[in-house]
Amino acid sequence: MKPRASRTSRRRTVLAAALILAVMCAFLVRLVDVQVLSASANVKQSVDWSLGSTREIDGARGTIVDSNGTVLAESQLVYDIDMDPSIMRGLETAKTPPKLPWAQASEKIAAILGEKGDAVRAIVADRLKEDPEAKWVELKKGVGADQFLRLRALDLVYLQPNPRSVRVYPNGAVAGNLLGFIAGNGDKEGLEEAQNQCLSATKGEESYLKSPDGLVIPGSLTEKPAVDGGTVTLTINTELQWYLQQMISEEVKAQGAKAGTVTVVEVGTGKIRAAAEFPSVDPNDPGASNPEDRGSRIFSTSFEPGSTFKAITAASVMEYANANASTSVTASSHEEFPNGAVINDAFEHPAYDYTLAGALIDSSNVALSKFGDMVTDQQRYDELVKFGVGSKTAIDFPGEASGIIHPVKDWDYQSHYTTTFGQYYTVTAPQVASAYQAIANGGVKVPLSLVESCTSADGKVTEAPAAKPQRVFDATKDAELSRMIENVAEQGSLADQIKVPGYRIAAKTGTAQKPDPTTGAYKEGIYFTSMVGYAPVDHPEYVVVVTLDEPTRVTSSAATAPAFQKAMTQVLKTYRVQPSTTPMEPLLPKYK
Image 1 (cartoon, rainbow, N blue to C red):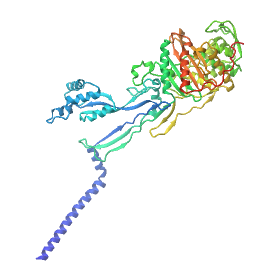
Image 2: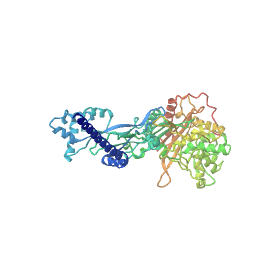
Image 3: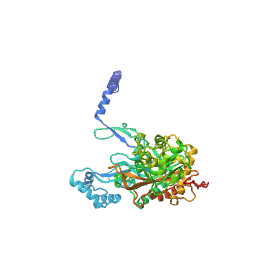
């Protein structure tokens, strides 16, 4: 009997093995079908059954800093605090009471948000009154990180802090008209617009699969990180900018003017070190300013330069007629010219044998008109263009005006002469600064700049494109022209008001009539005044331009003298410019 039992056992073992082998073969066949033959269809079916989700990841907008690294604009994370009233009500009505009942929780929430408990409860109650099934109510927008962390520590499941990035300007209105702002609809102004390519972040992306019940399927998450925006470094000095904004605000009010500006340019580099104006705008709250005050008047306002550009007329006759400081013409305070034009000086005087230097010192329109006759209209036009009239600066600031210079063919009998003393064409304050930068720099014009560089999130520094310096005036003649402008500051009527002890100053004023847009004629007694100068004359380092729009207490360019003196003094102090080391040359004669 024993052998029969062995045979039965072996038979059972063989059958079991066969059965296992059959099952394994079935699984193998199915595995090949799932993973090879029907793989594509199965993947599609799994995706169809799950829910694919993609979420954009925002990067931080870049920072704007001044030449010393002081932050002028940055992005910060804030939180909008929402809550789900339905969850709160569910907890309140549950058999097991919540750890922190709503009566107590609302008091703690209110204390963190800087509100009263009654006010928070009223917000929620009003929402539930509108919609008893409401699942959302906003408690407060834009709270800071500290408040967010304190709210999170309450561990209230119905609170829903939603993060978002906001633009913050730590210095308020300082350089606000330059920085611009980002409006609620995303529109950008000022440097926020001009430097958007550097400042903009590159969005990232997060993708994953979810099951129908909302769970993320393990292993399905993929992420492409966001790239933060870069850092824009400006040429301006925040401390100087702050002082000049305060000062020009006071001077505008003291002179009863509509507006005022101060522009400071470094002679050797063309870098704008300050561009202050009043009225100004706080980019944190642009809506608090009038629309016309939200841009930059420095770049957008063009005006007839008046007497400041008599220096360019002098340059033209020096270049094309070989005139010099002692070349003379005879001019009285009122003359009618052969072509019928009538020209007047601002003060009564008999006929003087004016030198070119004297014509600039006394700012004689009649004398400059006669000097202008020494060259052709085209030559004077070419000189104005060389010094920057009619072209935007290299900065190309958003909304920047180019000014207007009419072609020579449009000059009539009157404008043939008025163009010699700064009328019948317009400029901006930066164009005035640029022209005098060239004079202060030995006749070499260095294009103006406002941006130093862009530093990307990975640390790569890209310097702003540097425009090529250009010689616009002969160096020897320029030295003589500079000496004449210094004599204007020394012998002119405002000499005592603009002195800076220890420094030799070159300066010229401008009083321009303002046209009436409805008639085209000049307004009676309404002026745009300016003053431009540089120092120290023996080694020029900074150009300062001051403008006042429609001053009423003093309507002549004398209105700008106090602001110019204060601005130049502060600039020299800020940059620790050494006083003049050589005395002024003997005074140039005004008359032959």
